[in-house]
Image 1: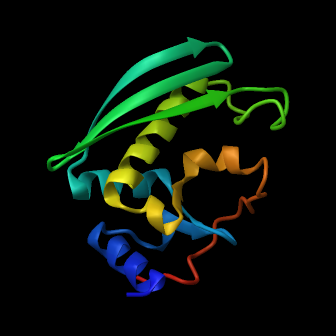
Image 2 (image 1 turned 60 degrees about the vertical axis):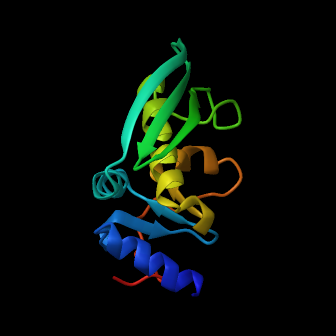
Length: 144
């Protein structure tokens, strides 16, 4: 099965539509709404621990379960004056870390990370090395 066919299958299984994802040159980005659709479709349960919470820095750990599979994953958010000094421009760093953690947990359990699919909450971190066109695009390689 090709990568395109695998993504088509995964996207259809989870009820994703064109507005739930967009293409980047090297990977696919799932929107927050798309992440929540996948979480619901796969019945993924998530709990969180706050590891660190400061005005400009937060780290969250997620415990996520789908069927009998359980994973642990982390996410952080650092507000800097520029992207060179941090990985988010938002002042709500705890919420950003939590959203990133949720995205990571859902995409890992759903098997989408292995297909170069990432959550839009992680896109701020990608801006450091891979500029993203902020205009939403439709996925060219995956059709619903």
